[in-house]
Image 1 (tube, rainbow, N blue to C red):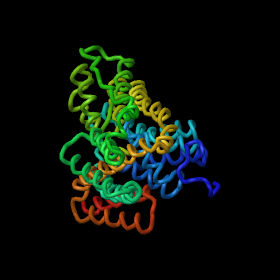
Image 2 (image 1 turned 180 degrees about the vertical axis):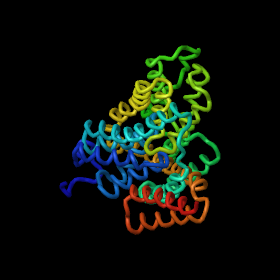
Image 3 (image 1 turned 135 degrees about the vertical axis):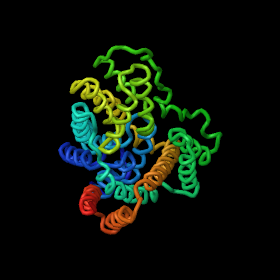
Image 4 (image 1 turned 120 degrees about the horizontal axis):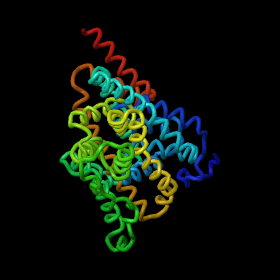
Length: 393
């Protein structure tokens, strides 16, 4: 690129690559991205900001902030954003499909085993070694992003406050909005933000689940698709929020699943790589076989492709507005505060003995000092756990 071009450019001026390179990265992440959304985003950051330099730290932060303000699985939408920036609408499509398909395929196999043998294979031995490595990966991403996002003492205070309030039980979406609003209020004062229409950035905030399925009805593939389409279009938050949505529709209102089946589906989504929303693949297969798995998966992820296609071209222009840039700054540090809180919670369950502590420390050294690729570290952590378990037994 010409050296005179500013670092932060409109999307249309980003250096473009090929659809094929986007597909290769997305598929690899789809097979190796264990640990939930925070870990997925950290691995994506390592690949597209640190290693490939497809986008800048600031662009990544802005995308993260914007993604947190729309429904759907955040890490999947971040991968889709990256694909769009690198290779246009073709990149958008293959990035999302490449990231989702490996996890959906694995979940489909596990669903087949579940239906035919009545149980799901466990992956405790794999997670034992992977989880502490994931903690190191997230910490590396937080270190790099924090240095870019925390531009003042005030923004640092917002991030720390969000971390504490999330751990105290406050809703993550509320904390994101409050972070953005307070940053604008402090930076410009109340008089400057009156009448500016900040809520115009949140066109989907008013979307709520209306409970349009209120009675037990026979199973149908069409209704299954609509349920998951609705969930994908309105759901904010984590896999536990997904659990609440699905239980209301599929267990309480329709009676298609039992509580135990739903918990089994959520656990499968948690320990397989890629997005937790592939829980939909499992449920769809249990209820409707292969057609049900396909329709449920397409339904829950389709809104993410649409939302990203709508907002991704607009995000750089938000940075050019003084007011909207302030909103992004506040949302960005709030999002990092949430990531830090999730890291703390994950760390408490991941680092449980001398071996997991050793894996976390070694992974951190390899990441910070030697910049080793995070995908190899994830695989290495799992391999060490397998060898240790066999040796110990």
